[in-house]
Image (cartoon, rainbow, N blue to C red; front, side):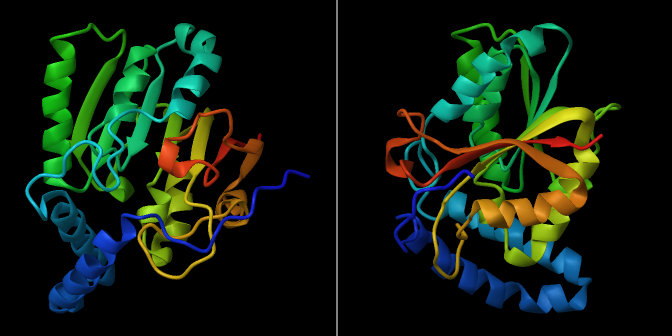
Length: 257
């Protein structure tokens, strides 16, 4: 049985930036949420919240708070393992909660048609601006595109997404959205596609975002939707961002036949 390393009961450092804004916005938006459907109200709260996070002291800069300034090293390693699969056909990748799009660009470097979505207008603008900068320096074998998009209303390609990469998306979501998250992953994934969850932050604490994650929690969400884990191990060997060492588990999921 695969066992993870116990983690300190500490929130990631940037959580102190997040919680005051969430409390303020939830209070400010409560009247809007009650005057429309609960779902629409919650969605509006999330949109305003994340836009505030991107613009609270001017535009969030690379390397600040939850912006790591580059692609996750473990994603690069994963895509090297999948490289032959991608060469065999046009592969569609989805990165929900893409932020500045570092992971989306990495998919495109490996030949994927990659879509990054986010609720923040500023995040999508920054990702599009970065795309222009990258395109001036290198030719991407695949394609990177970005959309201001609600994850739950997203329409997948005809056959579904071949791979979905969830990193700091589930942990940013209020707990009441989790079951809906799992159901939507099942709706979006291709029959033979792969869902990859980089489970972070491992921990045992209250509140968020980021909300504490565990292998058991993610398994309890995805298994009832027909997913089974094909791989689930702690991230080691320098494949985490330095500030996240020991707090991540890479899990790969396929839909049961």
